[in-house]
Structure formats: C-alpha cells, structure tokens
Amino acid sequence: VSECSRETCFVPDTTCDLGFLDRSRCPAWSAQPSSLPVDGKTLDDVLLPWSGNALGLADISFLAGRAKPLTVGIVGPHNAGKTTLLAAWYLLLGRGLLLGPGRKFAGSCSLLGWENIAGGLRWAPGLQPTFPPHTTSRAGRAPGLLHLAVRDDAAEFRDYLLADAPGEWFKRWALNRDAADAEGARWLAEHADAFILIADREALSGQDAGSARGALQLLTQRLSAEYGTRPVALVWTKADIETNSAIEGAVRETVNNRIPDALEFPVSIISPDTTAKGTGTGLIELFDWVLNVRRRPAALPQSTASCSDPLFLFGTRTT
Ligand SMILES: Nc1nc2c(ncn2[C@@H]2O[C@H](COP(=O)(O)OP(=O)(O)OP(=O)(O)O)[C@@H](O)[C@H]2O)c(=O)[nH]1
Ligand SMILES: [Mg+2]
Image (cartoon, rainbow, N blue to C red; front, side, top):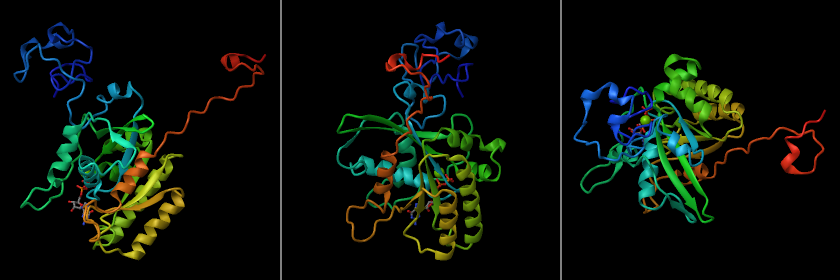
C-alpha cells in the first residue's frame, strides 16, 4: 500500500509521481505527515521510477515515454505453463542463448520480477529443479508485466512487455467478456500487440481432457473476436507429454477456423536427449517469433487534396 494519497504514486517503492524529490514538499504527501520517514529510507534517498518488480499499469508510463513497448499477452488456462515459459526464457537469456546472433540484451526494469518467477527453476547442485508456485489473481498493480529491452545489429532498440497474468482471468473472460473480475484480461485484449495462446498438452491428454478442450475452445472463440489483425501464436506447452491426438486435433481445428493465421509452436522446458545444452524444446524459436512481431503502421486518412507538396497535403481543404 502506498503511503501517498495519489493512486498513481507508489512512494517509497518508486519515485514521487509529481516529481518532488523532497517528499515533505509534495501537497499530496503532506496529507499524512506522520508516516515519515518510511522503512529507514530518509528524505535524501533518490528513488527510481521503477522498483525492479513486475510492472503494473501505472508503472509503464515512464517506459512508454521512450517508445511504445511491444506488449505480448500470454493467454491460457490455469496451470498451463505460462509463468514457466517466461521463467525459462529468462534463464536462457541469462545464459546468453535466448536472443540469437545479431541481438543484444539492453536492460530490464523488472529484473526482480523475472527473478521472482524464475528463482524456483534455477538449478542448483544437489537440488531438483522445481516449478514456480501458483500465481493467483492479484489486485492493483496487475497484470504483472515483465520488461525486456533488446538492441539489434542495426542499433534498433525495442522494449518488450510480457504479461504474466493468472489463468483465472482468462477463464472468466472466456465466459463473459465484460465480467467484473476479467479487467486484466480485457486490458490485455485491448493493448497487446501479439498474443500467445497456450494449449496445455498435459490437461488435453489427462483425465479431464474433455473439459480442458471445451475451456480452450471457448477461450479461442473469445480471442478470435478480439485479436483483430494482431499476430497470434498457438503454443502447445509441455510438449514432452504424450498427446491425445483426437482432442488435440479438435483444438487445432477450432483455432484454424477461428484464427486462420495463427502459427503453431510446441514447447517444453525438457530438452530432447540429443541436445546437451539444456535449452528445452521450441523455447528459442517461440521467442524469435516474439522478437519479430511488429506493430502495424498507422494508416493515415486518404487525402483528396491535389497538392503535390507532402507538407501541405493534409492541411489542404478541398472545397
Ligand atoms: N512436463 C512438463 N510440465 C511442465 C512444463 N512447463 C510447465 N509444466 C508444469 O506446469 C505447471 C504449471 O505451470 P505454471 O507456469 O505455474 O502455469 P501458469 O499457466 O502460469 O498457471 P497460472 O499462473 O495459475 O495461470 C508446473 O507446475 C509444471 O508442473 C513442461 O515443459 N513440461
Ligand atoms: Mg502463472
């Protein structure tokens, strides 16, 4: 909970959003003078506009000031492997294997957030790797957006925001687009530049495969009504698990019918025996797809003016 009365201010997590380095001078802060100083932080500490944790909606404005980040919505049911996918990417990034030739890591404002989800997967000698704990619906600064900046050989710089949202949101959103507790899913549907639709191979081959299929088909229908012309990847997670081809075929058919241009990627954090590097299956290929997502260029209105100078073209009125 912020100590400031303003909803968009998260002092002492981040800096004062009105720009006051000396908090006692901020009119919104002085409403609660008794709460100074906080957590051993003195007034002289200069705070950054980010805390390092996963970013919330109010936090991304300072990032968007540089250039609009490309936002990727990872859409899928509960326990489908969404967070694991992000964690696996982070660990590959740390080993220098994720970005491929010609691209370089250029910073992140949510390293702590990445570390939080990936810490459990980090391998330590003598320990079995474990999966991240379940992510629950969180209120407030959510969905958790993980930030990554990438620079390529042509010195082109890009910010990416990868959304780690809980499966519950999408379940409610699939049933009812306007559900009160699907706010986060709606935000993603509106703002994402690309979608990763997660199909959980474990759920689709297990005991409740029928209901998992139904839920995924419902989610596909919802997404198909929302994605417009944005790129969609259909990702089969837990690709190491035996498939139920009838169920998988039914899901594939629904996706092909509803979102015909969706590309398919099977991924798994388990590497096939032949690769000694331990890079999993399909993870790097999928991230390469993410890196190549581009926003559609803005469409300018058709001009009916007959002026040949582009500077005056749109200002000219034809009467
Ligand atoms: N066999 C196998 N299991 C996996 C793989 N990736 C994830 N899992 C399993 O999937 C479970 C759930 O993973 P999460 O990443 O937490 O799922 P999630 O989609 O983030 O779930 P919510 O946040 O609750 O919506 C893990 O505990 C693992 O058991 C994989 O590649 N192979
Ligand atoms: Mg999760």
